[in-house]
Image 1 (tube, rainbow, N blue to C red):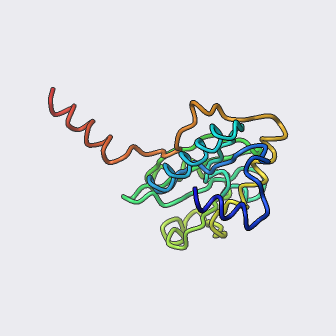
Image 2: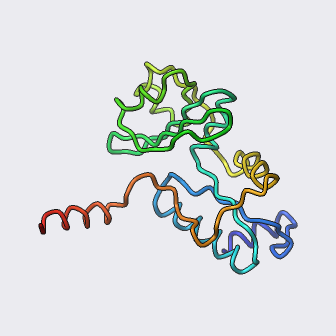
Length: 178
């Protein structure tokens, strides 16, 4: 929160003067996403502001232009975070294996921001773009704000697309106890 105050002060922004809070809610690192979403929720509660949560995959897809776009991020463990967008709307966001990406990519421009994916997805001729930034999320936030499409603060959660290791372990233990 100290960083938020410092950033706002350096930009000449008064936190009580804000009209909404926007947050990129994943997918990404569990800790980073959790901290970002928690900070956004805390600010919204304290300042009584609405919130807009934007997917990192949606921000990446914006860099792919119009039409059918598949944004892909490395999820580790041989898996990928994938977001299929068409006409500015989300068709699906999911965790997929390399083999499963081919079906999603049919007829889509594939957009990546991680150079290591260039080789892994070479068959799909991916377009390598800059990594999504908070500033790159602004057009999506603006469109949603102008349309009055705010998220329910109480229901806002991280967009992990993958369960945490702790959740996976609990499920495995529950299955072993049967």
